[in-house]
Image (tube, rainbow, N blue to C red):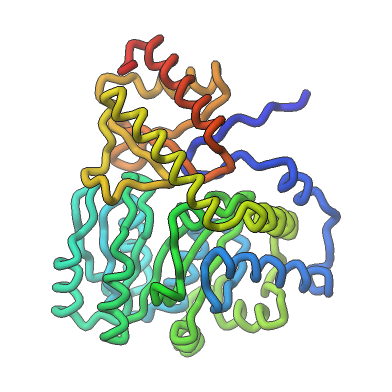
Length: 367
């Protein structure tokens, strides 16, 4: 029996097209041979075009969390002050990462659903000897996108502060130009806006950050040791056995992205998000983030007021083949999340919204 693939409208992973699935079924090759070198180079070049960078982009067999962990294990020194805007579940994990390696996080907090003001961030920079800043670009627990990267990076450049950004949940969805923004390290993952299978992370590293990472006197991880990663990267390999089928799948996903076009993919997701937000507003369903200018394109989060969220999610899946997600962290029972990071276009989003309207009507929700 062949299982029909559901429409995964969760923050990731996504429903994969047949082309990507078939690519992952290719014969396994020697990860120390010329075939793999060619594959590695192809994937890196494709990634550079999405990251919008000329920097090295490293391929890691591990989820986005592994990519973030690699940054902290290598590019943040013990005792270093690192500024972290904290406004959700994943930003809280960044603070935890800093504490685990013995850094001193300078935390600028805001309530969930908002982002810290630029003034509060500037004040923290001015009043602390900060060496780096780590920003989560898109907070999937709250549906908030931090659209102040340009301003923060400008402040950082003037002071010689390195800027690290987590774009795991929205690279390829939200416009992001690594080099133009002056971002030193950018982390992404395979299973969301890049259109690939789950299980890979990618990290772009600037020249300044590269030097710092290689000079770190106490790189703490064996598997994620950046000196090894960089040394093998130069010969288009990974230090340890990579997830070859996933890299095949990623190569095909990047080819699809190239065919669609970067700007067209961004535009498609923006249109999807507009349709979803307009539906929620028309049904008097409250969007969770407070300020419209920071509403996420990749993860739409709404409050469950007057809605049996568990029943809604169950019936959408069982009756219509669509999966959306419960809230996350302390918002688990208060919100529902809709992922907008896959291959869906207008037709699929219209089907989803019509299905959601029917389910809400049946369960006595907003519709």
